[in-house]
Length: 461
Image (cartoon, rainbow, N blue to C red; front, side, top):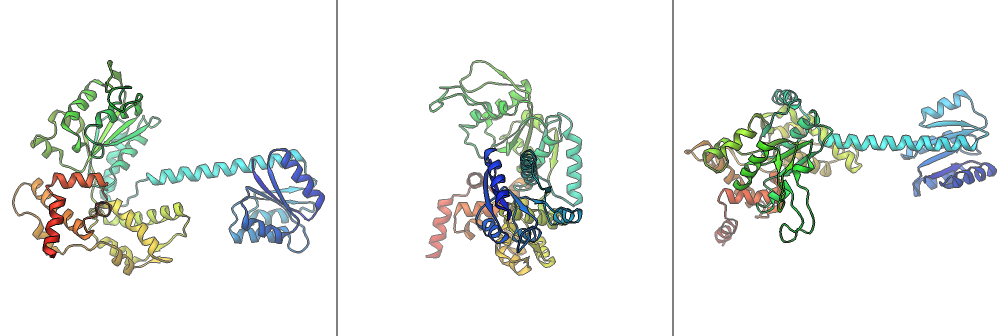
């Protein structure tokens, strides 16, 4: 059922059209002048508007111009008993979707309503599809990302296992989605699991599923990620954080293409392409004995290393433009531009949270700015960066590369925690991390949050 508005100065036309539409199941509102029509569109939503052209006072073409000025989104069909080619051309240029001549047949009217509404539905579906595609679109201009995308194109068409490497927030899941979308499995499902976000005791059930009664609380059968991704792609993010016991079970699945649900008594064959990602150095984890070497060789077939945002600064302007347009569309805002000085200020920042942090900053800047985002607003919004001298002192001067990186990460986390008064949610957001991942990162780096906060309060005293 559609809500229709009919504007005509002839009472008989209004009555006959309203009756025809109502008998067809539509809701029809009628009015006999342009002024009343403008009042109605300001207070009500209409799916379609029919308007006569020749009316006393303001005619239908002038009314159409007023609709355009007000931003009325409903399609408008013009009707007239004195039609001419010039009149129809002008109405079309003003935005009318159709032009009908009187006398009007009921069949023609209802067919017009159906066609216009179908077109509107298609346009809305296309708009939503573009939004979904835009959300997962990879934006780049730099040579570094051009090399990455060339690798993606080469490996996507194969069944080769891909391991995506990169810092948090660099877009590892987007790359995985692109590999899937350009593969022969594109018609299948793309299923994701963040290994760092699932408690160790639940990850087996999440991956393989469980049978009813397998454990306390298992009230029904649960289909795991592998079965959900049947004939598609399973993306295992942060594979470096997978518990050792699950590494063994995952290796078996990759070797035999079979899973067994928790509490099950028979294997289930799966046909799934597994793509993994991590921000950690898997080779180093293997040397330290926390990641299985045989699993490493199974998943580390075709590595794709994503550069951090600070190494692809030429991508910042195109990313900012993309995010600004995307955020404006999602919120119904007017599109805002960034002044050259503002973009230069964004390029000077180190972006520890990478592209994810950039999007958050862009959204914040759009809320704080007017028609244009200037450099002063950017400088005031960006987190304060440690000085070069302070940064160099925080990096250990000795030890392996992994130990030095861990030391640097520890200093960055401590600084961010202090800056946000040890509020984990705000700290995680600033670093582009999930809150659970931040807790695990602190634990892995030996940061005792209670002790750190206590020490801070003691120093303040």
